[in-house]
Every structure is written in structure tokens, then in C-alpha cells.
Length: 105
Image (cartoon, rainbow, N blue to C red):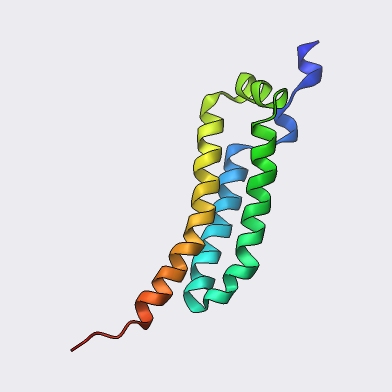
């Protein structure tokens, strides 16, 4: 009976999660490095995806079922992947500012 109520077949696997977050993060890094206004296009996708995934992980009923089926490592890797996917575009903005600063000599 437990097999009928699986949770992880409705959620992204770790390779899918890492792939999406890394593609979004790396693309955001290079786009924000060209022009910081690209953050207005990249960060909403990252934030919406992260909020939707976090709401599922932290749900009172779904969260424990995810931990039971996928393990605590899925939760930790989900947090890490979402963090990297959000921070990489911000790092691109810092790289853009660093390129714009002219040396004093």
C-alpha cells in the first residue's frame, strides 16, 4: 500500500535539480557579467523555483515523506543547488563591477 503513495516520482531527481540550478546559475553569471540588468530576467526564475521547491520540502506532510524516500541528503543537496543557482548571477554582477574599476596607475 505504501508504494501507491510515492512522493519522489512527483519531484525532480537530484541530477535534474542540479542541472537546472547550474544551467540557470552559469547562464545568469555570464549574462550578469555582460550587463547587470540581466538579473531582472534571471533572478525571478531562480527565486520562484526556489520558493516552490522549498515549500514542498518544508511541508508538514510532504517533507517527511521526501526524507523517508530520498534521504536527508536530498534535502541538503537541494538547499545547496538552489543557493548556487541564486548566488552565481550575483557573482556575475560583482565581476562586472570589478571589470569596470580602473586601476590607479
